[in-house]
Length: 208
Image (cartoon, rainbow, N blue to C red; front, side):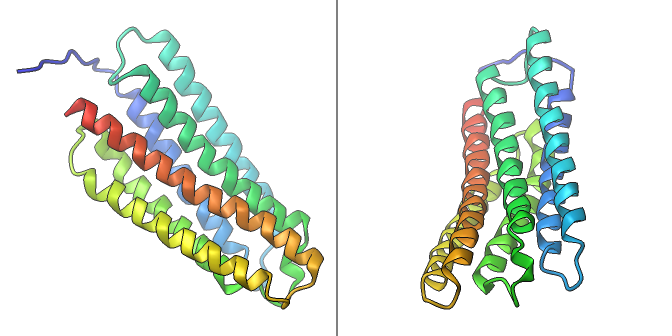
């Protein structure tokens, strides 16, 4: 039988839970961009605040690793998970910021497929936030990473259909370039959520 000596310090789990909750804040702000009369500048600024909060959490995790002799699981996995969570919010913040900077909300409507991508991200964020507190016990996590990977496939399909729409001739070429850059950030955020799920799966397998 394998025994593991674990620290009583739960701060790492608290960091990861805070980081995951931040992702929900980020995707909810992205969703607000499509609301009639939305204050786009304010939303972009609040997304920046969320991104800064996530950076702060990531730095706290790194600092905690360097000052902790015994960690709840491998240090490399802690670094990877913290970095992956931070990557997600970086892409989300970049997408929202580009929508504002490029003035894309002045269009009659953003493509339906772009809204579908944001909806996938919102589901991934809520799924990750719900799962993160279970990291401490390593129980009931399989459904999380399976569903998160399935959602990433939904995001890929929405991204491909968005590209078809963008290059259909419906939009001005300059707006196509702008929206393609936003789409790339949204798709990268979907992939980053999958990386978080894959890292948690790897940690769970190691610790089981």
